[in-house]
Length: 181
Image (cartoon, rainbow, N blue to C red; front, side, top):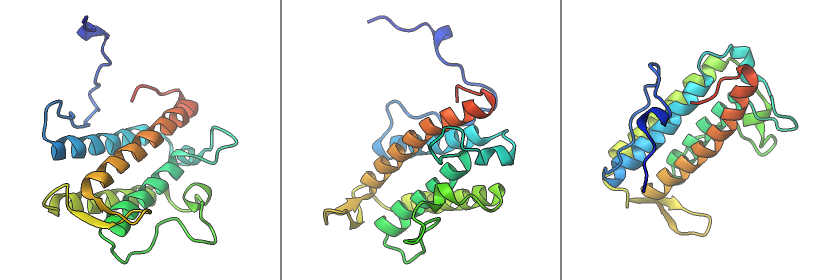
């Protein structure tokens, strides 16, 4: 099997501070590093953009924007780690029965505040992972009534970020042509 020459691999740039994902690490370190890599990828996709442009909905008819993706992922962090896994009694973020799409549709407020909320929710999620003894520890129930493990939540979150980082690629390229994060 031939290998791609090193000079043809995507380069890392100076401001790329994402963690390396272990290629032969244990399961916990691999999953947590993968999730962290995706979180930091989203942050990089939003960095250097004028705050007003983060709210642009650049791919009609979609209501998605980088601002909305940040709101959505802050809500998803809370939903999976605190509400579904730990069954904490906390309010939903950017959602109500009267306005279920408010994470993407209602972009009022300061973008810096949204970053603060997202950072705080990611911090709470990291704390839950760090204080849970094993990936096998189960919490709340799935839709089918089965207990969900921390492992399952981590995999779910990696998939969620991967999907939305793809959307963020398109939105960022539409804003200023930046690609390759």
